Length: 333
Ligand code: CP3
Image (cartoon, rainbow, N blue to C red; front, side):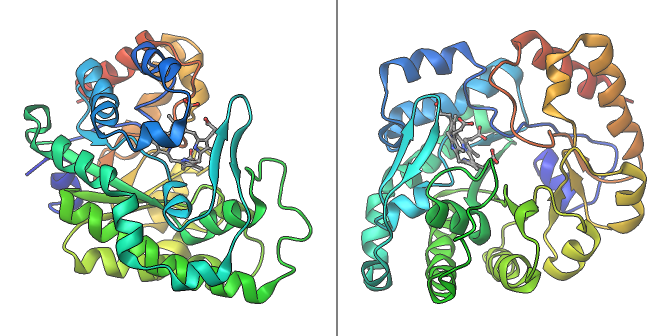
């Protein structure tokens, strides 16, 4: 069994596996090298040879316990026919939604369009470097994908006041998303993904109707993934109540963000926990890093705990700080 599965399934507390969200990304010079020559991000995600190389880059350097596939949560709206572009120094920009077209979209069209992602997973899975390690497939949660699809750009500065205007559009998109997110999960599992993580990066923007936007749509995906026989990790970034979330949604493991109080989460939540460290700590110095990393390792000493961050690693992060981080986690007794 892999170290992460030992934590998740056997509830072992004496192993602290480690991987990092966005571990395959811009803080790595070898990623930037490839990215420079491949200016279209979507095309890069659909290039199975290059995306395999990128997926394995952080494993070569840091011997993490899992590979998270190099892809993006916005590949789902892309597969559903919405235009998705990534603009330099701006981020994602999405096109108009054609609801009729999305309703009538064939599952085979979606799966064919995203086929390179499934081939990538299959290849990574069979790679020697993945021996006794997990291949993490992922999806965006319905709420976060809805936010990008309707808002069309990152909601960094909050949602536009028109966001909730068209309630029937919201209901319909959530229904279509449930179908295609499940299809994307199934295709990834069939290709060899051993864990699925659900990223709800903008869950913290939900103010009302938690059932409609958070609990119901996420539970639907969690139940579905569990039935496929694969553990599922949820990351509802920025929510105020992880206790209710875990009780209602019942993921196999929950990734906490860096605002979560460690004492409270230990008493509130019984399932295995992942993550938490503020990625900004990796921009400070080794003494600070030691102090902060040990806070997490000590707090979860008697609990199944997978080391990770409270959000994706920042592009400014220095390689030697990541090396130091891995050393601290590996040497913890
Ligand atoms: O290593 C990994 O974790 C695997 C790859 C991965 C990417 N995106 C690659 C990527 C994963 C898991 C994601 C998830 C993702 N994508 C999320 C959820 C996690 C989170 O960070 O909250 C979200 C919200 C997105 C949408 C997205 N993709 C944004 C907002 C951006 C642009 C802003 C930014 O930070 O760059 C991306 C682009 C993106 N996805 C990059 C990478 C490596 C950078 C692309 C580049 O080189 O310019």
